Amino acid sequence: MLLKGKTAVITGASRGIGRGIAEVFAQNGANVAFTYSSSESKALELEKELSSYGVKVKSYKSDAASFEACELLASEVTSDFETVDVLINNAGITRDNLLMRMSEEDFDDVIRVNLKSVFNMTKAFQRGFLKQRSGSIINVSSIVGVKGNAGQANYAASKAGIIGFTKSIALELGSRNIRSNAIAPGFIETEMTAQLDDAVVQQWRDGIPLKRGGTVTDVANACLFFASDLSTYVTGQVLLVDGGMLT
Ligand code: NAP
Image 1 (cartoon, rainbow, N blue to C red):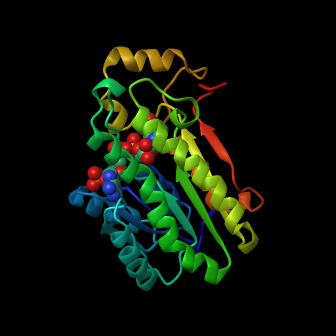
Image 2 (cartoon, rainbow, N blue to C red):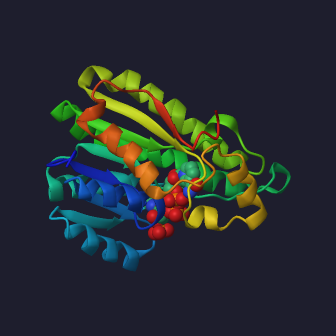
């Protein structure tokens, strides 16, 4: 019960990694406010599942890429939950293509949903963190943001941007006891990676020292560390959860 009594806000938790984080957090006693973009039935199903752990849970349909929507979300969540202790910026999309074939729209969409969303949400929730003089912000980047990836220039740029943002916010807000860290997952088995063809998946697996793809729980456990009091002296860090892939 590492998060007993704390409240966490997680973007994009209707499925995949966000859902895994919501489950691990609720199991550890956290109240959970989470967002989704369109999967309402999945969100309601998750609300029910998490409530069975005896914590307060509420889902919000909210576009993380919209500045106004994030401002509105922050005021709704604050009035529903009173205080927020942890913000997890997880929502993300891919629109992969070689630069030669990548449209301006695919570049802009990925930057807006993956990177601008982190600015929107952090700005909206920092007010509460500043007032209570504590908070943990956890941004979901990717190893692709560290090393780049052919066919993912838009996605890699957004994930590298998240790392720069995370470190800058750690410097700005550290004196107020607000921590900012990033997780950089490697190959995690979710709907996002299920879109890849078998040969590409095998190639990824072959390059992983632990010889398996990661699970959403592997990523959630790393977030649990950053959200809990186990990491009170850790800020501005990027934790690779990649089975050793970048080693
Ligand atoms: P996923 O299965 O595709 O789930 C994405 C989640 O984000 C869904 O809940 C989706 O909601 C939500 N979402 C999408 N656009 C949104 C928006 N504009 N506003 C609010 N929510 C939005 O993806 P995933 O694999 O779990 O990835 C989660 C995060 O981890 C992403 O940032 C991704 O880049 C990162 N990551 C993933 C991997 C991997 O191997 N899977 C590796 C490294 C990093 P709906 O269900 O309503 O669409």
